[in-house]
Amino acid sequence: MNESRYRGRFAPSPTGPLHFGSLVTAVASFLEARSHHGTWLVRIEDLDPLRESPEATRQILASLDAHGLHSDEPVRFQSERHTHYQKLIDQLLDQGRAYRCACSRKELREHGGRHPAHCRDGHANPGDQPFAVRFALHDEHSVWQDQLLGPQSQTVHAELDDPVILRKEGFYAYQLAVVADDIDQDITHVVRGSDLLDMTAQQQQIDRALGAHPPHWMHIPVILNEQGQKLSKQNHAPALDDALAQDNLEQALAALGQDMSRLSGAPDIDTLLERAAADWAPERIHLTAR
Ligand code: GLU
Image (cartoon, rainbow, N blue to C red; front, side, top):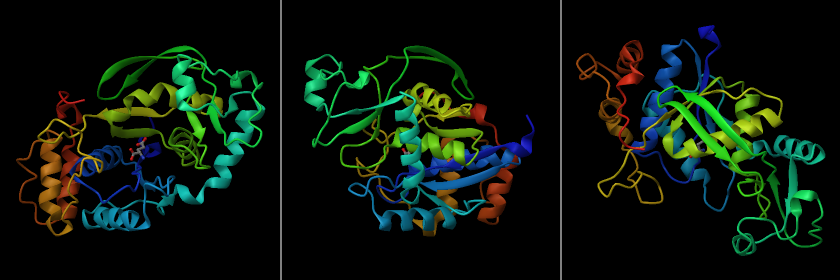
């Protein structure tokens, strides 16, 4: 690979301030990019105004800056990208790779995941009812190489797994937006938490339907709290204290299994990150938690 072509990103959804689990993901994606002399971008995935807030966006960006994690290009906001997503949805609808669907979750459950209104065949006429748009998956047994977890295989089922790409409430959905922006920003490598591993086969199909090659993937174990749950805003992971940025970074590097002998007690954050990039050894990340 031409190393200067490496383009990575950290793409948080602003449902709350940055916590330790998201810092670990940010640090891993940053160091992967730096160690390949690549470009590292920050993208705010602010698609759902009911769950997300401008205040959380502000806090996340301030925290990343305080931790020396600066985007190499202007930060992208998905809330400013609606026209592009709509264009892609229209294109997928025209190509028959997406369909309108007014089925409720209950109806789908009662029909074992099949669409009682045969939405996939274009027979459903949502009329005045609110409808979602779903991507029409092909049945596929997808096999790929995760750069940390090794060979992966996943089966996706047409109809049963078809993801929503435009929600009934009118919001663009993660599954489309993440792929659309990874393509548009020319992302070559995705480093993210392994809680998103199950999304990958679907995202690869959306990539190909949009005429792109899927990026390389590296899924890192998610950080668990004492109850064994993923650290997340939903289970009230505490916000990082930006005044302790260097300590937080050291703890994140230790959680990523890195050799701390040259890293502990660096004179400042930038030196710490430079050394961490020079010594970066992703194979040291423990693979226990998933
Ligand atoms: N926005 C997603 C999240 O915060 C991550 C997207 C991705 O890395 O693919 O969970």
